[in-house]
Length: 596
Image 1: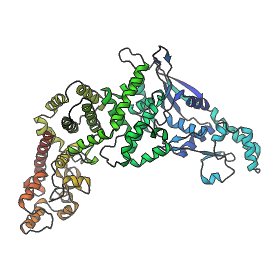
Image 2: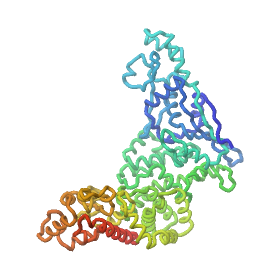
Image 3: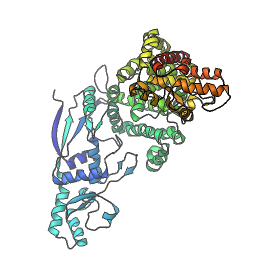
Image 4: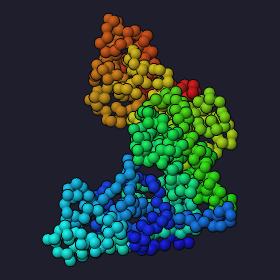
């Protein structure tokens, strides 16, 4: 089957479709990210008769209404939103929503003598040789005769025929063709999604979440535009709480909604452990409410698809929007969000520095929301959310095909006890072979962002361990505040002895240590700097560390999984040291996991 047709339409025709709603361009499908100069260049290309590329649209499937009638689907813009938005701004004088979610106007000026365009600025506004805003001419506010007459009155030295010729050419911009690739309505949602994902728009690879967001915002009958704003605004506020005042000032309609009231708590929130993107938010809201993990299913449901009959029904559209709305409200709920973060922090993951997998965090939140919905008691919820999160980090569960794995996991935990399901996964993936062999191999790496090292640090945080050679400062304080990762066998010492980056930067050689302690350790081999520390303990001094007894020193080494034998080690002992420490780290991680 031919999947698309290619046609040429006039710019004015396409803009008329946008204005009438024939082409659904979501209000904030994606913020307008083009620079004003890029809008200027687009207008110049049209003026010069250069092609400006194709836009791609898909006519939604027809939906069966309750009374049996068929509602014809709108065209949904798949690719080309930035160009269409630029045309609407420059030609029609419409507002655009910029990357900071502000409503702005982009005004393009035209110099009829030099036949060039420029972004309007204060200097141009003072110069009568410029037409200050081309939308006055292109939107039909001012006719050609009046435009030429008024300009000539201000600039009598310019030949009127030259002005008329330039303005005639300017006004013909709306008669220029623009290509449209229209996907046929018979295509199933999965195929359209696949096409959507493969298209690059301005260098940004579009995702299934982008497609779902387009579907949401385009359905104004179900208040999808407000739902889309809620998703966008929450993810923006999570990063920039001060943006709330911008919403109140510039989007009073949204500010009156329950969504706005339910996310108002973010304006005073500075927690940055979990800053979900719109993609994260929609994925969690969808999966927790629909018990499905593939966002292509969300697109199908929002289109009204009946999976059994393969038809499209209005009632399914309405019900799907209601469920998604509930899912979003559950996600942004202050109590849910803060209690979830409290649980993650109680597992030792107190800083975004320790979180590498956003999908692991997303599914942990899904587990939390799902267990609350099932009425599981608070203590059990905390236990299973902690354990599932750490399990998924240790196994890299969502690093491969996250959508498929989300789909499998949500179906399982919605149909049976999560305790039963998690025990089954642990038995298969966290056996003795994992703890005694696989984890040791995973700790043999020089990547400081390794999830296994992060779990080790979380274990230290949860145990309230002190930093290496610190008598008072805890690892958690060093991670959150001013601590740095340092080398047990100093890096320069190993480099001088011929070792490369992959050797001296092994994570088994890393500890969190106070900078002032690290400076005093310097480039000495462990045998030398430990001799100084033991000497200071014997003389009751504090030259290197605040540790004041041999017993406290040994406890500190144990907490940091540093073998006591390091106190006699030099460069020739380095590889043996790494093997020994990896074993100790693996054992600590195992004890930590089983305590969750």
